Amino acid sequence: MAYRRTPAVQARLDAQRETVLKAAVALLAEDGYAGCSMAAVARRAGIATGTMYQHFAGKAELSVELFRTVVRREVEAVTEAAARADDPHRRIAAVVETFAVRALKAPRLAYALLAEPADPVVEAERLVFRRAFRDLFAVQVAAAVEAGTIPPQHPELTAAAVVGAVGEALVGPLAEGGGHPGDLVPALVDFTLRALGGH
Image (cartoon, rainbow, N blue to C red):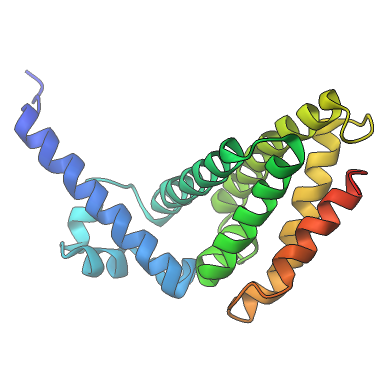
């Protein structure tokens, strides 16, 4: 007869997995993917390295789950910011501004998401991340076109181009440690609105 976990055991394992992911996010923000070995994450989480393998088959699986956890949080933050704005232009600006400000406040983490050399499994997740932001942005572009505040255009193509440009513009500052947004964020917002034909 197969062993079945009791609800109490499953709850303990779920809580431990959450602790592991929090520890991994903290290490990613400090040291990037290179610092997120199974042993390093186990130390940060306060568990034995062997216990890590109850939750993840290895570093590749941990990295994918880590990437998804962080990306989900970032997509939620940008989505909420867009929802608070009251017209298509402000929603577009909110997407770019929120993404850039959050990136510059956590430069090591953002650099890991956008550009740090990583395993192929992470590179594959990075494509999913870009598509998620492209799709989110495309919704705002389509709404602005429908409202007549920007010229007709292909929302997904425009969104992919803008997400790529904004990400590329941030890579240098993130690699240098981020810092205060200064003029960079307003410049990125202006660039985006001009690129969409909104100025």
